[in-house]
Image (tube, rainbow, N blue to C red; front, side):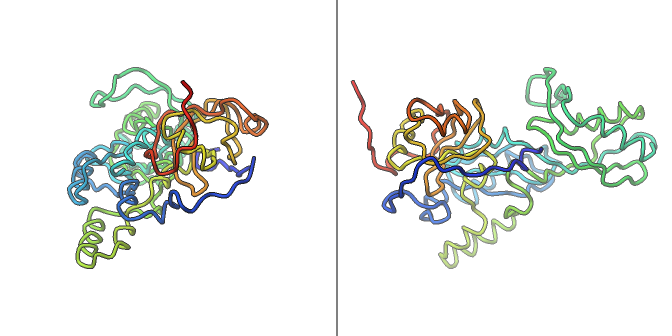
Length: 329
């Protein structure tokens, strides 16, 4: 099963109403908060680097902080998640999310289609990769998982395929290795990213031109709907991570860096195992923090005391929900 095909169900542990006085449903946040906890599913064009595209977005939106979720080479196109202001805290989760690409690889000599299919199938599963010389990371041998590698078309010596893979997989190196396995040599000719975690080309993908157009409309009319057309809540980028929903009274403690204890849990999704990365959320679906589960779904449901998740990255600012806990000295 691919990461984006995991089926999860929400299991209720306890029931409690959330107060309308604190927090907002992500899509209903006031405009400034909506931007501060927002992201853009950007269609990167060929030519500029990912850092240049992020810098242009920062200048267009006149923001102080901006980040992106996974570098694409200048010639590569496709999904480049751009996180705005306080949403920059989810960058690491985006970097670790699985990816999907469409690639055109150029073979150095002709090979039959059946032979190409057979060799592509050999690369599905765990593979060893050493990053290319031009990579910005240490060139250490490492293991990456290829979830699927589908041959779409062969035209002369051009091979079009779709690959779903673990984060950190170098498709340029994969193309080279496929050529070596075929015995003819090959190099990557074109590449487009079509998925990054939960974000796909159907997830309100916008171009730089789209952004510029919507911004101009907003500045002319001051109608915030134009900004909401291309800015999404950061929670949209975290949809593949399993969720633990907590009481309003537990939110402030988590925002101060506390670990989550069993009494604070109202509901959680199935399929959580110990050491899994999870999103701790309010009942309004606001992301409070990223955490590491300390027990499975089944164990957490049975617990009535003790820690169930260790907070690793606080996402929500302090003060949005009231403080209902006391420090013991």
